[in-house]
Image 1: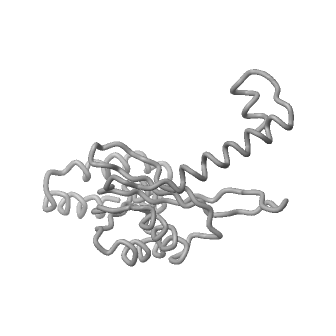
Image 2: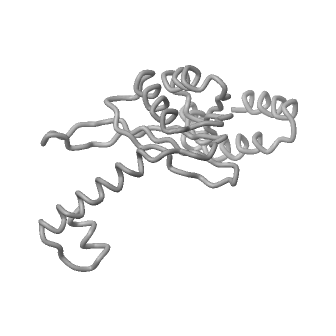
Length: 181
């Protein structure tokens, strides 16, 4: 915090000033993450990343569960960012239940990676919503099966499939892509 504050503000801060900023920031973040969700979010995007965090003086890797909501105006909103021990059905389901308790409603489509626990949690906590695999995660997963020197050409062709006008055209092009690559 000290390094970031000094870099942003251009001068040094005392340890007590940094402590005060931390307390204020923690309170603001708590309020933000507990705020009531009033408007409907027809689309949500869920993902997790692992970060090293220090708790009780011990550094450890923890899952950071992140949910973005997209309102009818097309704007993205950070709905929740929470620490969890790991990505699991129970951690994701608890995360979604807390969001619903805060007022999350109107979800029609949930987008995520292909994590089995996350998909199950979405089905259980948001049974009214359809699930869709994230385009970016899908592309990354597809690249795992190719030599690096072929990746760029393969990706260009795979992206073209997403530009198709109807499902039949996309299926035909996908079949050709699978044969080629």
